[in-house]
Image (cartoon, rainbow, N blue to C red; front, top):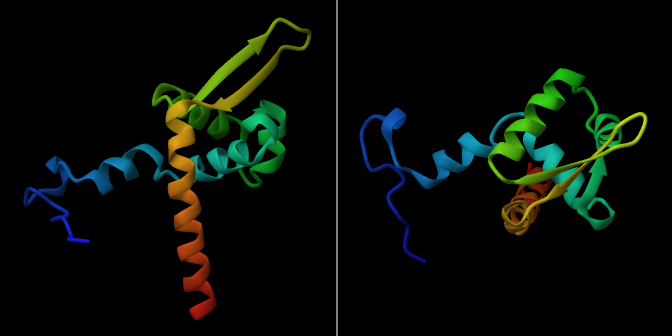
Length: 117
């Protein structure tokens, strides 16, 4: 496998680096755990309250912000049901499903690194 040059420009703020692009989309602290829990759920779907319980340490406003950003970036889809109280479910979109094998590979790599230390 040949290595691609990581940066095409000196200034990393203006680079077209695929790694930096990916980190802009999913590099925020809470986005990966949110995606991971949704991916691990039955039918790759979780309700808001389930996510709130699973992603320990996150406050409601941050969860909402991350979910909106993930939806805007088309990693998840949001479905709201007209019930009382309202029920909202989040599922992986097609784009989100394509990310899961990459995350699984990263998980295995990190697991090996942790054992080596």
